[in-house]
Length: 290
Image 1 (cartoon, helix red, strand yellow):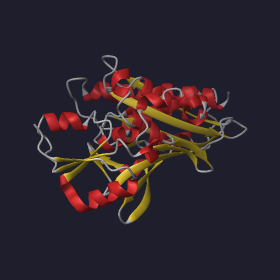
Image 2: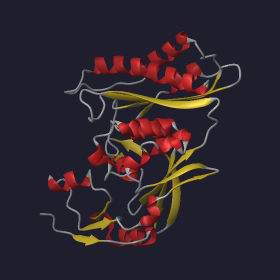
Image 3: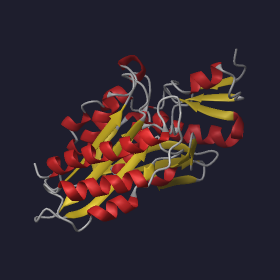
Image 4: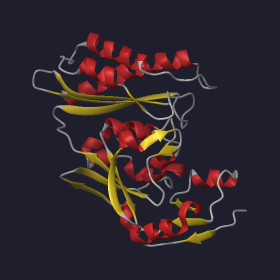
């Protein structure tokens, strides 16, 4: 049995006040899919559990000039099919469809999935490829952190004591010339992937790559941003150019140094990075040219 105080604030301001008051002994709980396992196994022993179940301001999904803003308490199931209303989120919707099962997705929240910072998280990989940012609130105010900087290692984030992740912002982009895609390889449906790759490309009228992002998951504690592979694509014509896409995919594979684990050897993971990167890039290019 967990011996702690259970608190139920109704606003973000109240949550931040409680976090400041109770310090490191306080943990925030939303859907509880990850936190419940830690509590049950005695891996954490908080003095206070702060439920955000009744903080309804964290449940909104809105579009603005910045892009699409998604409240931290939005459940994963709500994000499946979100690309019908917000087409730039297609890759995120596709990735979430493969997360666990409907029962878990009905409780698990976007903010919780991000803050868990699991090394194999498809959600983190896709959000970094989409150049997303997260908003953090505390008793001292708010700050915005790029997703690429938020996850700092395995189960570790840049959130400071007393901070609450309140919102994810995915910037808009021109769907007629840009697109994102995601590929993953799993041993069993619903599992975390052995390797996951997110890719984003933006083209000019001549089919040259203006912008590219390639992000690899589960090959390090934090997602790997394959910048050398991105540089291989930029200013090159990548429409129908399998040679450039293959070269970038090989560079992405050379950029990672995964460890072997019960799911796969490090050599197999490196091969997967090459294959999945090319598949994700090929799909992103196809979507970008319509």
